[in-house]
Image 1 (cartoon, rainbow, N blue to C red):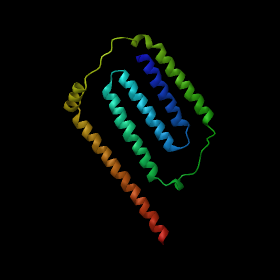
Image 2 (cartoon, rainbow, N blue to C red):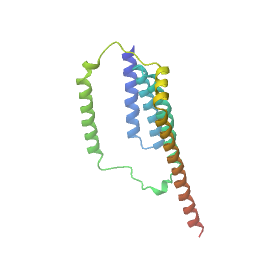
Image 3 (cartoon, helix red, strand yellow):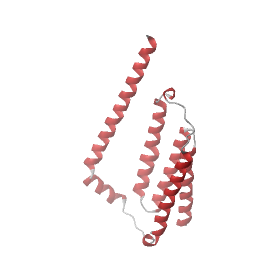
Image 4 (tube, rainbow, N blue to C red):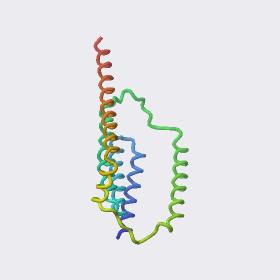
Amino acid sequence: MGLILFYILGGLTLVAALGVVTTRNIVYGALFLLVAMSGVAGLFVLLFAEFLALVQLLIYGGAIIIVILFALMLTRTTDFSVATEHRRWPMAAVISLALFGLLAGAAIGDSGDYNTYQRSGISIEELGKGLFENWAVPFEIASIVLLVALIGAIVIGRSGEEEGGEGDQG
């Protein structure tokens, strides 16, 4: 049953990841990214890493997608030139396939070393205790840095709107 779920979640993740890079609509790309992140979270659950699955859904699946959609709403589309086709996509496709082949070969070559049937996970209580006892200060510092970056982005975005508005009146 676990192997069937692995193949379903892996296939879902791969299809959604292909949707992210092939779609031309950025909103659809963000939704495909949400599906891909949800598939990865499901794979973490299969690996008995519930905390990583939760972090995957909350931080990447929720926060990053919201940031992408806010960035879309705050940017002016007239500032960007329309460039839908690139002449370098065949080279990018060849390099991507070569990298995929290299990573797949490495994973298949080492799969015998990691194929065990006895898996165990750490409890959320033990993990939370370790994080809040040993890593509370670095998490708080990271949250302050992210808050400062968010405030800076708002200030930069607001100052650009005010300058553009004054130039239109005069």
